[in-house]
Length: 489
Image 1 (tube, rainbow, N blue to C red):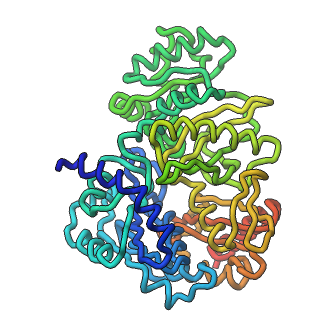
Image 2: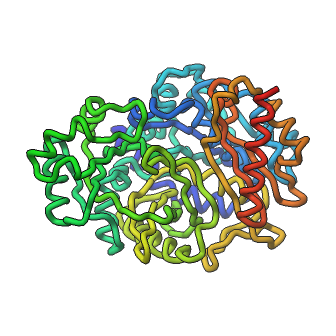
């Protein structure tokens, strides 16, 4: 069989595997976690400490709370045992002596700026180790950050299905694909144009946008495969409104959101991958997001709503999130997200997805779809396991196993040059001494992630869990104070 037909056979077997998992709770199952950043590598270079973003999916180690689960966690470089043990210590009711033997860490020992999946495919030794672990399980599957042809090849090589979106449907989460899904779902989204293939088409689209919508003062140019807002650029019409004026002004006045990006580099990327032009929605009061899941059996369910924390020069770059989204639009965000989910479901999409919005007055405007595990995935997954709780889609709140409502403040971007040199052990010791570390008794405290980036880049992620959002923000501020004290020592 060809690679495609082999993959299709694996896809066809996925529903039966899901039913087997539910039906036979005692049979061993293996999750092969491949946190590959299979995106445009030039764009990823704009993200500080991006090689450590693979660690965001260490939250999958918490799946070891289920006794029959074995996890194989793959990484570009070796993740220290100190960090691994920290995650295992978070699992409630499971001693490390029980969870650690069910965890296999597989490192490629390769920090080159290439996708992890590509590195694994080049290393027969790594693949053999994964095969050996799969042989001990009744069934297995790959959990990855996003899915492309590389992940398809890995699935065929290992003989197990992907628990993510089928690679052939990856385009549904592109910037153009998002606009198509919003249109089909019948929800509000910005005026604009998709499937642009050149900067000349960008000029034409910017001129048409202004002509058709005179009140628009800024246009947003987005690369088709932009990551965390780093692939966006703004054009203000004060520099020219018709095609001739825009063409002359664009090289000087197109404002890229990634600090290292120039017009020349941005336009070169656009010529390769294409993208969209749409109105910059003015007067934004909030940037909520809704998360959903389409399971292996095709079932659709709501996972959460969030308010996004956006930074960068023009508020286009994702930096973190708070849960839950504000009450005034929480239900509307979830309802619109589920409408998009129904369209994705009908197209055959699968796995986690998120729909980002902006609020302007009474308007709730959809901005993009992410068909991948993103910055809102690991905080919610972490909270669900360590509090043994669940999200209630009827009320839009999360309740722990004790019935208490829980909120959190999460960021991937707690960063300062002064933090460089702080060791993981020093951070954890300080958090314990200040009673900021998550306490399973009170169900309040902080969980750290991307710890591998701390000493080298002065960057770390943290999720602060509490009964109220105000308490979670208070704990985050205490963490920032603690980091300042550690850097001053």
